[in-house]
Image 1 (cartoon, rainbow, N blue to C red):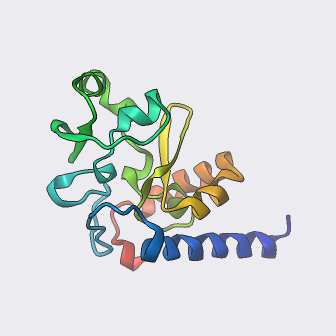
Image 2: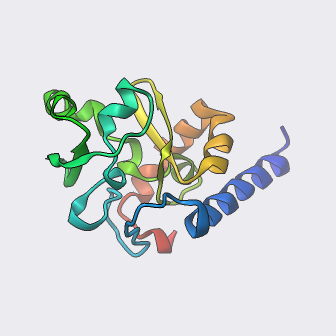
Length: 167
């Protein structure tokens, strides 16, 4: 693949991600704050994953809305779970269920950006939960998962404490 095509592909993916923030993000009410310098993507009440149950991403391989009756705090975020059993499973090993890049978009991190996520656009790779901003970006990210994870891992230390709007 030529360097110019690769650059165009990344620019296209970023454009898709930004478009996703404008119109195809999850329909649940949440507050993504592009001015936040937090390394974790949380909304009101420090809720992460827009309230989705992280354990369900691993056990039933689909997003499942958590219930405010079943919550646990870990690393500055409040996690919600669909059941007491999932809460117990999380509490036994919270690091296993903590999403990559603080719950920000994996493709965004690969591009040096902090973007919100749609919890329905996810993949568990090597025991880690990776999320993306929308279906188009997820598709682009999925074209070369190992390379995109490596790029995101390289970029994350430099962007994690910066405001999304500054990137």
